[in-house]
Amino acid sequence: MQAKTEPHVAVIGCGHWGKNLVRNFHDIGALVAVHDSNESAARSMAERYGIPVRTLSELLTDDAVTAVAIGAPAETHFRLAGEALAAAKHVFVEKPLALEVSEAEELCRLAETGDRTLMVGHLLQYHPAFLKLKDIVRQGKLGRLQYIYSNRLNLGKVRREENILWSFAPHDISMILSLVGDEPEQVSAVGAAYLHKTVADVTTTHLTFPGGAQAHIYVSWLHPFKEQKLVVVGDRAMAVFDDGQPWSAKVQLFPHKIEWIDGHPQAAKAEPVPVPVEEAEPLELECRHFLECVANGQRPRTDGAEGLRVLRVLQAAQHSMDEGRSISLGATGPAVAGAARRREGVMIHESAYIDEPVEIGAGTRIWHFSHVLAHSRIGRNCVIGQNVMIGPDVVVGDRCKLQNNVSLYPGVTLEDGVFCGPSCVFTNVNTPRAEIERKDEFRPTLVKRGATIGANATIVCGHTLGEYCFIAAGALVTKDVPAHALMAGAPARRTGWMSRDGEKLGPDLVCPRSGRRYRKTGPDQLEEIGDDRDRTQN
Image (tube, rainbow, N blue to C red):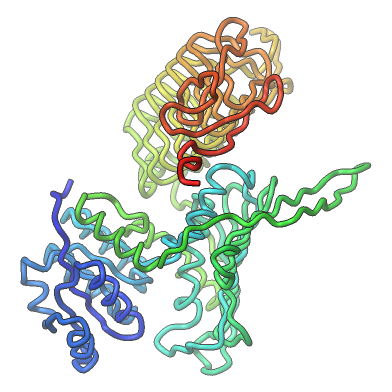
C-alpha cells in the first residue's frame, strides 16, 4: 500500500477541457504547474492562476510534483500517462484511458507495479445526481434491472481527431457498467458519417448483459437541441437522470407497474417522485476524489481497471460498426478452471474448482476447496469462504459473504449484501429420500438484500427472507421472514427488529448506530422512514 502523501498536481494540457482541470486543482489548492505543447495556452493559464509553466521533462523529474492530471488529446493519453507512471507519478487521465485495449492494460500494469494511483476521468460517476441514482439502484428500489438507455445529444462540438462514439459515449458506458455491475457479453453498434466520410457523427450502441439486462446508447453532435438523459427500467419501478433539468428535478423516480389482469399486462402509471440531490460541481468532486485517493492510498472509483472495462466496450462497438456485425465479449479459451482463474480482478484459490460456464464479478475472492457449478452467477466483490458449494443455476448478488461450509443448491437466490454464516443450511426439497429422485420438486428460496443468516441456521426451501432480516445462529426457518425481522428458535419466531446497520432496535425503533428511524406498518411489517439527524437539521 502506497504511503500517505500530500498531492502536488501538474496539469498537462490546457485546452478546451484541460483549462477546467487547471481551475479546479488551483481552487482546491493542489496545483503547482502547467504544461501544454501550445506554449501560449500554457502561459495564459499560468498568468491567470499564478503558477509556473514547466516542460514535460521538468515535471516528470521533479520530486515535488507528486501527481499529474492529463487533459491532452486522446491520442496522447497512453504516451503521457505511461511516461508519468514510469516516473513514479500518480496519474489522473481524461477519458478514454487509451485508444487500444493493449495500451490500457499496460498502463494498469505500470500503476500496479509502481503502486501508483491511476484514475480515469469518467466525470459522470462523480455527478451527485448519478450517485443518487446509483444508490436508488443499490437499495433495490427499482428491483431487478431490465433495460437502460441513454441519450447524449447536442449540436457540436464537432471533432475530427475522434468520432462521436469515442467523444461522447465513454461517459454513458461507464455509468451503465456501474449500474449493472457487470460487463456486457454482446456489443453491437451502427453509425453514420455526414460531415466527413470517415468520422461518425451519430452512433447507436446496444449492450446485452449476462443477467438479461440490456442497454442502448444514442450519441450525436448533429442534433437540434441538447439532451443528456439516462433512463433505468427495473421490474419494480423506473428512474430518470436528466442533466438538462434543474437540480430539484435531475433525478425522478417513476413507480409505474405492470399489472396482469385476466392474463393481459396493463400499465399502471404513477406520478413521478422527484429525488432530492445536493448541488455540487461534478468536476470538483472528481478532482477531490483523486487527491484523496493519492493522499490515503485508496483505489479510485474510476480506476484503471474501470477505464479498461469501458475501453473494451468502446473498442467492441467500433469493431461492430466497422465489420457490420455483433461482437462477443464472452470468455474465450477452454472451459476449465484455469480459464476462470484468469478472469480479470477475480481471485480463485488453486484448490477451488470452477465449472463452465459461470459468471464471476470483478473483486470476488473464492477460497480453498470451494466449487462453483455450471450456469451459476456470482456478483462483484463477494467473499466465498472455504469448502463452499454454489450451483448449478444459483444467483449470488454483489458484495455477498459466504463463510465456510455453506452450500447453495438450485433454486437459491441471494440478492446483494447477503451474509451466510458458517455451516448454515439451505434445503431444496421438503421431504427428501435418498432412493427417490425429486429434482422436479425443487422449491425456490429468495434471500433479499442485506439479510444475515447465522451459523448453523437452517432455511427450509420455498420461502422468502425479507430485506435486512437477521436469522440467529441455529434457527430453523420454516416460513417467510418479514423485512428487518430478528428470528430465533426452532421453529424460528420473530423476537425483535433489526436495523439496516445490523443493530437490534429498541422500543423507539431508532438505530443506535446510524440514527435511522423505523416504524411499524402492520403486525409483522417494519419500514425505514429516515434518519434522526434529519430532525435536528429541520
